[in-house]
Image 1 (cartoon, helix red, strand yellow):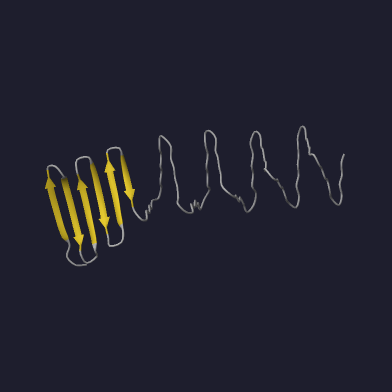
Image 2 (tube, rainbow, N blue to C red; image 1 turned 90 degrees about the vertical axis):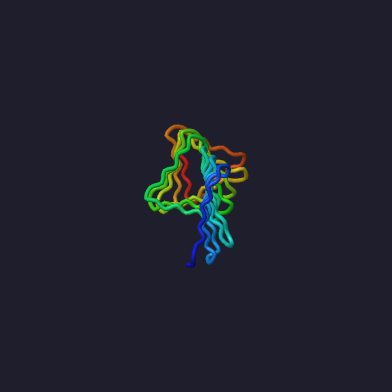
Length: 166
């Protein structure tokens, strides 16, 4: 790495500006403290990243953001949103737990849920519906009602090699 050009500017109206220029690497680093916010910028030949801190928040603009820590805790007093312009992946090498005090909603075009051993869905009331059809398949299927079992349809078929009723 060649020589760096370093500047410190002190101005009663603009604040403090720290600049480091790396001509060989074509990178300029700037920190501006203007009395209302702190802005740190790294500008290269192809990309620019900026961190802006104000009294009420921190804003980060960059091409890639990576965070490494032993433990991460994020807490917000209001709404939290995570959004991706492309695929969104959540991975855990242990358990994955999600909970809500109130309602939980999941929407997409197509869903796949698969487990290597057992999948359980439970609740006070369970409703499954499909606007065109609903299927349940398995080598063995048991429907067990401890009280009343109602089956109804406009057209009904019950088929099998051995069918026992009663």
